[in-house]
Length: 53
Length: 318
Image 1: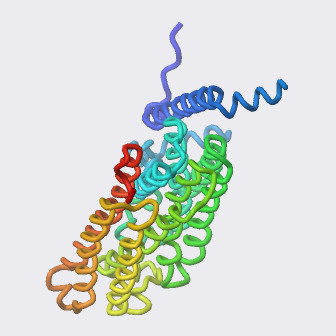
Image 2 (image 1 turned 180 degrees about the vertical axis):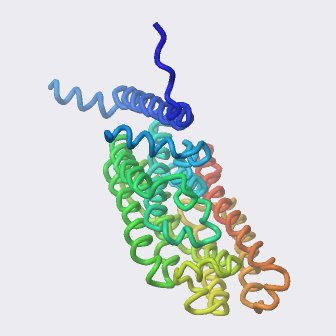
């Protein structure tokens, strides 16, 4: 079964939607990267140890 | 007729050319101004005596840039009426009919909130609060209040553009000291001669828009003298900075050469009559404006070089 033909609006706004999509993807990568850096940082390790003690 | 069909027909009425592209929304963030923000904030971050994880540093600069861009979008939203009148700003996304004013407002507010929260989370809340204050200063104090009410608009409003190196420094250290404020002062004192030179050769633009630039309220002769006085004060500050914690022999050499050239340009501007300027199509004013761009870039570049050489025992006076 074929999908409906894309509305003309979607074609017209393709570049905008692509840009927004890529920006959101980049934002996810940044959040992930920041989380990795923060979790593996010394501050986070010390705070975790304090909670455990 | 349903709401959906009304919206569809309204949207369909727009042609491909009228449709805003992603680039039009990006243009709301004033990318050229953003490049200055990125560079000065980066210098502030790297000149700070506390090392930052490269990825955290990248995120800090990114969110400072987004905050700067957000304030640019809010500025375009508020100033849409005068942007339509001025030749220099006529092609901006709102006056060009690409982006709605409400869209610019929404993007500006959303990115302001996002940048402040993310900078706070990535670095520290002092830096986040500083970024929030900078956005507030640029949008409310400069754009909404000073720009249309006083010829000192550029002088006081210039502070907004001078904050990024301070934010970069605070993002790295979480505290304040004299050095970031010297970088602030450098940009702050540089802004008036830079913009007044532009106002001299853009001539009727600010007049048409009713913006009380010094050229409009006090005349072009007074503006020429103001450029000279501010440039002289800037030269003292710029050369004096060489003997602070962020200066050094490389910075001193750059500062002495550039300030000599800048003072020479300001002196020439102050001596010129309007007839002289008209005769050569504001050649001196235009070259002074171009030099001002290089001036700030090279001063901050020299601070950066001094900071990058320090780990090897070469930067600074030690």
